Length: 348
Ligand code: GTQ
Image 1 (cartoon, helix red, strand yellow):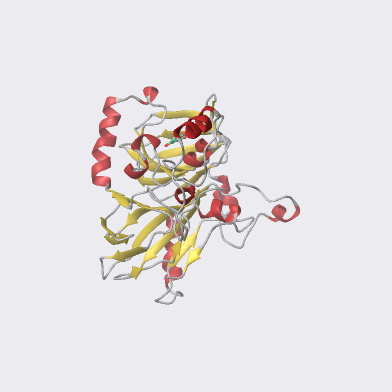
Image 2 (image 1 turned 90 degrees about the vertical axis):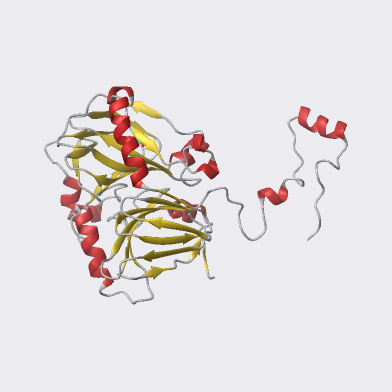
């Protein structure tokens, strides 16, 4: 490989002339922009323990009324990317949101897409375009780009969910913005998308003679996902990963354009070693405990903990229990990378 010229080798008046004209020589920066073999990554492999988040989130409930917060969220920020940038990975924003009984997180819509994955509590709900969606632990709720959404809590005790947004991507494109709305009129058809698209392989008949819906299914109940994983485990070889993708039932493709969502079951005593891949990811523990090695960094995880996986990382995840399965919810940016044509899985 030839040595490339450095900035310092260039005469000072030449460099000053470049700067004065808003010009930059590529060659001193070329290797940084296009490193050989593997991207340079600032994202740190890491875990946020729910035991560290939960008391601080509840404290936020006392310190900051919902009217002063709009969304009462503690953001899981990866220190490798700068805490102020609110990125768990370069493309994935993750927040833990708290809503207390009778509070409302007011109606709005924005250009980034969001999902909610319920962490604890009962009685929470999200209204998406007039449809009231119940939020039970482990449920995945979609609030895609541009759709009106507001949250409420009709039960007792705190409700916490994980927000995953493609905000870092949309923000970096200088395309992130929000519109404020009046409270929605709730239609008398709660959870209708779940009712219409109840089972894989069955669609409302009219779907066949019209263009595909962008976001037909808005709630994926955990009860169904968990049962489907258990069933899938019964027909999956020991050397294969038990993993289900959340998809748009009308297209069979990822349910949002930038971020992808899936659920993984680790069988009792199982260690999985997924192929190294170009996508970054976040893993949230629904149930179980164990260890992980992410690019050689050893992490310990338990219920409701959340981990960051950099692009191109070597990943190993072990279920510590030899009697019970563990369940993980995964967010990744593979849908965006596939669309842009550079998604890769590597052997070795
Ligand atoms: O609940 O709509 O964590 O708009 C960040 C931005 C949650 C929300 C976040 C949001 C929301």
